[in-house]
Length: 181
Length: 246
Image (cartoon, rainbow over all chains, first blue to last red; front, side, top):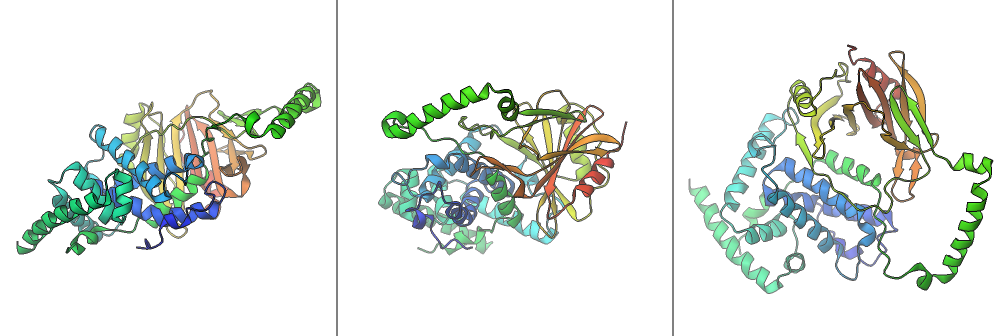
């Protein structure tokens, strides 16, 4: 998915003055932020909208980014995390999950497959606590390392490792149950 | 730990979304960073120079010929009020992120739905080029005063956006100097603007490739925008002229 280049690798540059670096940061992190929201909220349309909100916030405040305090990745995902929290706190969205796949934009088979995947993901993550769901989204949606997740969530790397181990084990059992049906 | 089953739900974002969002970001003004020190303690020489320049410019500003040049120009073209200015809007203002409501569905249903949400009826263009595919309507939560329809062009993957709002006499559009020309839509004046605000230079940038046609018809203000590499000004006018007149 083109997620191999880490934004932290460009952290030494003056981000506010170098448009090329911001462009690279965007190309690298946009798919990760998008998939973070997909895993967190299991809705493609909402994921697109919140990805846009996250980058608009980051872009407006880019002159306030301080590389000494956080890597670009940590900073971006801290914004994304707050955007997700704001969204979850708001009243029920007007675009219901079942109606969220736009008509006429994709072949029917793709849409059915996409809906099945999102339903499957939602079923899989159903029953997790907010913290577990957040960490799973950061790990498997965004592809962050345990250390990066620790920075975003203010937990220790060791703690992240333990939570991930237990949560994935629980999800794997559910997954095998699906397969047996 | 067997966790491969969890990665299969990842998906590449729509390339169109990726491209259009990046384009949109270029037009957003950054917030000026808070200064931890006063400029006097940080850069005394620059501060003294700035004070001298301010005094000089203030004195020069009283000269009539200078005053005429630094004034903004407010133009009213066909019911649309436009302010041409050198000053980039929103510099230094706090960031306000306005949540949007996005609605998708068949276009004809979305038009009716938007009339209900906006609280007034309006006519809609009957001739959108077939290469453009309708995607969604976006409403701002605050006031819900406008509806923004988005189409995507198949080849260039660029957007065509139609904003619709009730016409009023307020200054709705801040644009750069010499960016707007008067054209006609069904014989009535309309404003054709090229370019966009450049977030990096804080200047109006004609090279951005954005082209917008704004006109007023039957108490409704329309703003139709596209990219010059995908649509011509004549095509925008054709679309505008396809709006039925009451």
